[in-house]
Image (cartoon, rainbow, N blue to C red; front, side):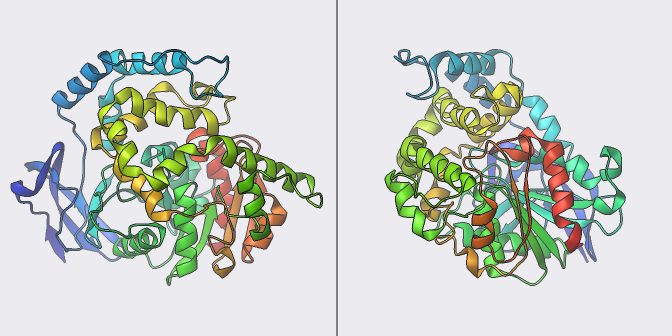
Length: 443
């Protein structure tokens, strides 16, 4: 059947322009035929339309919003310098000032727009919320469909460097039989997806939406990958085990044994019976929850309160996110060693322009669980095959012993030489190789 995208100007927001096209739905997918004459504003991010159409999507931010951002940056009121010589009081003033100076003078959002708009982007409404996503089909037959889910403070930008190697492996040193069809959605409340106005948009509901999305795209079977929120959503999807879900891959698994959770949260000493890898994981998590998790506690309990700062202050938003790039990347606190300033600012600017500081924080409030705890995440209920890749500068390195205990259906476990929390972003080649190896047996 053929669906023609239609739109009512009264329902459209201010900050995106979209070229509407005719979409011909076909078995297993769709063919897009451009109609350059029909140009309208983008759909409201809170549309109540209940159709199942897949609408083309492109981004164009009005220059007035970019001018306003630069004006706000120029008028930043800075705090005084930290009184220590390290980052123990938070991200250091000089680091943030240099990033924000570049943001306000040299950074060019239009390059990010061009990068996004070079990809097939779409939007569809699921359960009353618009889900915006990238969808790239491989030219190779029998490609394995995969849905990649970002986290916070990430976005779909995390995966852009992996799309080429995943969809066209022969151009990147792989084999045709390694090919994937790639779907990269924005979590509701993030990026250009809609901002939920009702309660309940946590991991379980998002996972159901992801299955609906994959089925709506015509896929009868697929795999799921995620780190951070993406890991929690992939876990939820695996617990639900919808027909056609072949396996999941995680780079931030929930493996803390139930009898250790309280001790870690309380800052107690590690039990004497732990193996060296288990002891290292215990100590990493104890440090994280004792010294570095205040941001999460605030977003879990008061997302609206932090949202005022993140929505009004570019420097405040940049510092809030940049600190995590510095802490969680494999960079010894200097994230520019693995991510360019432009890459980080693409992500930060996306949060600014979509005004998703509060809405993205609400996902923490909706989740409100220990994302590292096997007991809290009910990992033993998962029967779908599970693959885990451990990157050395992740918040903690999940030991193989805990992973096997947490996920009875674990079929792949590997420790990678480089990379941190933002695995696909920092090390796209290693990340791609892990997905090829992990999912080889389920094709």
